Image (cartoon, rainbow, N blue to C red; front, side):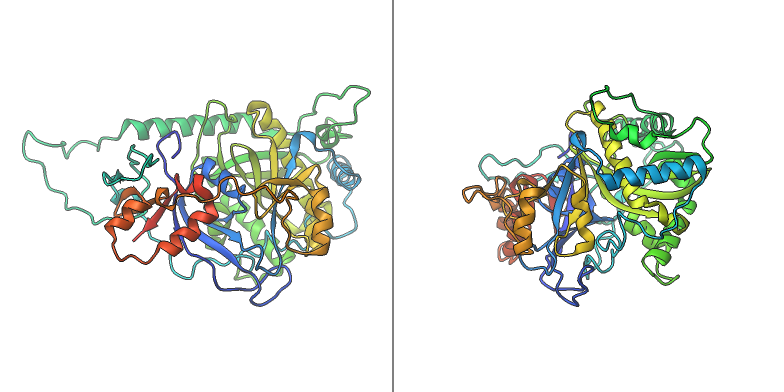
Length: 496
């Protein structure tokens, strides 16, 4: 449970059936576990991506690594120690030449994200649940209580009720007119809880600060000392005159809950996405609909959170917009989490495909991570999603060094240089070489996993006693093993 009293709430959907792979195009070789996240704290999502999970909209999935045709390894870059490669420097110079002189390269390809299936085939690369997730009307749910039937020893079941996020629809009670002298005055506005008012004020302040501080043009970074190589920030601004021919502005807007700036630019952003999907990924015109765009790139389970030791913009889901001479030409979809900036997707206007905007945006996002780390020291990594060694077009992610891959058995990080020889031999590999190392957060006590049943939080052991004859233990155990003991004791698994 987050400090503000919020729970993460999920529905687990398993993952026994194979489906089409977006990498090798195998018709039923792609396998993954999935769950629908109605709401999620940023710390829980940080812990989940550190166990190989990843989100697409509100659907969170984890490849079955030793079964899927193209194993997908979570990859992270050490942002503070990153130095651009020769290819990266060429991309930065190419963009700067365009900005300063208007020179547009002849080649029509994106060196960084060309043909990248993972982030684009949101309907082929992952399989959303066949059944519909619960329809939630938060106004119908008064609160979540904690079960008194919690006999598990040292149970970590929370005792603070959550007041606004249960996904279980409750029947509306008929509203009765209060008797004179009793109850609320129906002629006055409904009272609001102080907690909700404080939360709204925090978000308003954050959005104002975000608009003032983050929506800014590129500013030159401080010069490195003579004996030091140029920094990434210096390469980004190198050769840019004070009055360039084109002006590029990078704006960060919160997408969930949507800020006024996000709402104002929504249509322009969607139009760029639609053009991108049709031109770069050959989608038919009727496929990239507005509802699909919202579901895939705007909806997010992550709650907006502020922390005393966090970045000024707060945690949660954002769109980083690239405005060229007053119009959007590219958008990077990002999650800002306690330890990292996680890249979700990038789309750009096809007219600028020769500028290698995939590579350029990744470099800008690494620089952005470094900027946030100055405000929040533990936020030091840039996550690039999945690295797929068996798909040559996906290997470019390994060029952002130093970087690590996540071992699929121990959930420890291993430098990519040590992983590649193993992956050259086998698409699936236990990357950690120490045979004694295990999963530090492996499931040990299923009974302590938290479930949400009839709007009541309880350990699974208490739920199983209440539901004698219930046959869901195998499913709950599979879920808890995949999220790990720590998350299983914090995240609420919905039980009908």
